[in-house]
Each structure stands twice: as structure tokens, then as C-alpha cells.
Length: 307
Image (cartoon, rainbow, N blue to C red; front, side, top):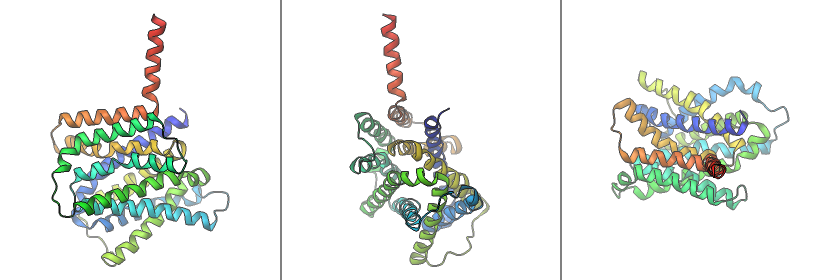
């Protein structure tokens, strides 16, 4: 199995893990505030990486400027993206937030094209458009049922957070290629946790020892380990081997996966919009990865041979 296939698999697993993270967040968000939850999540993730640092530390010297670049990447992804996402969901419904989150592939493709990091082809444009359509079909009607209070701020916070994630996806690849995805993810997450600590000090004061319930602690540990260190290591590894717009296309699975888990775990109803939206997102991923076009070519070639 080549690295490209493995990168697609890593991106898919990371996206599915992110969907489970939404469910875990719902279990514990009532016991703390969004900034503190993000801080403890990435603190636990950083502690997971800490014993690995001697093994993943690059052999070549990492300059102060490189550490500075990785710190900025950590600020973008592990602090600002998280803050924008959480701040948005405090004032807008999750459905509306899901539609905003679905603009990640669109924004990433635009940023990558503007800075010459990736060509904006018809296939890529079609894939992100189909993915966004799938999210809009599932969440669009609920997203429109909002109170005007705070909606503008919530939408702006979500789109700003998504833009930060797009910048990370585009500009992290050089560091990932040079220093390795595990090292970059570990250091970026540590800087992100530090930035969240500062943000918490400014907004709510010194975070105390959290008084989570047993279920809350299980959720937080899960968020920091499997849905933290492992999830982001897989995502950044995929970014190393795929164009920036491809791994983030899998993020479209995130909100729909959360709904599927809702069906499986808490008995929510399967609806036709959910099925159709999921089908569109999967089609977008197959189209963006080239699997669908290659399959159509093979079918066309087989028909031609049969004639």
C-alpha cells in the first residue's frame, strides 16, 4: 500500500475521529467553558507527545525561526480555530456551525490557489462544491432557524476559525516535509495549549483543577488522546503527502459522522436528507481523490473493449 493511499486513509480516520469528538464534547461542555475545555484537551494531547519527543526530534538542527513558524501554525490551528469554533457554537445552533465548518475545503482551495500552493482544477472545485451541498442539504433547514441575536458574531467567528484552519493546512506542509508530521504536530499543539492558557488567563482567570464528573473525565481524556494527539497526528501526516485541499475535504465527514453517531448511540432518527447528504459528501471525496474519475475511465474502457 503506497503512501498516497495511506494518506487518504489517515485523513478519513482523522475526520471520523473528529466526528466522535463532537459527541464527546457534548458530554462534557456543560461542566466547563469552551476555552478551558480546549486547553485541557490539548494539554493532555501535549503530554501524550512528550515521551515521544526524543524519538521524533529531527536529526538536523531546528532553527529559532522554524520554531517560530511552528508556533504560529499552532496558534492558528490549535488556538484560533478552536476558539472560533467554540465561540460560534455558543451563539449559533450546531447545524449552522456545521454549514460554516463545511467551508474548510472551499477556503483551503482558495488560499492554496492564491499563494500558488495548489492548482484550482475543475475536478477540485466540483468536489468541494458537492461536499458543501451535502452539508447544506443535511443542516441547511435547521441552520436557517436562528435568532438574530449573536448570529452575525457566531458566523464571523466560525468563518474566521475556518480561515485559520485553511491557513494551517496550506502553510504547514513545508514544515511537515522538513521536520516530520509527528514533531510538527507535537510542538504546534504545545504552543497552541500555551496560547489557550494565556487566552484563559485574560478571559476567565487561572484555570483551576477541573471538577469533572467520571463521564466528563472519560470524555476529556478521549478528546486529548484519540481525538487529540492521534487524530491530529493522522491529519498532519495526510497533509504531508496530499495537496492541502484533499485532507480537509474529509472534514466534511465530521458533522455528518456526528449525526450518524447520534443515530447509533442515542437513537436519533435516520432521515433522507442525512442519507442523501452523506452520499454527496462521499461522492465528493471519491471525486476529489481521483477514485471516481479513474473508475469511470475503466468502465468506459471496458465498454469500448466490449464493442
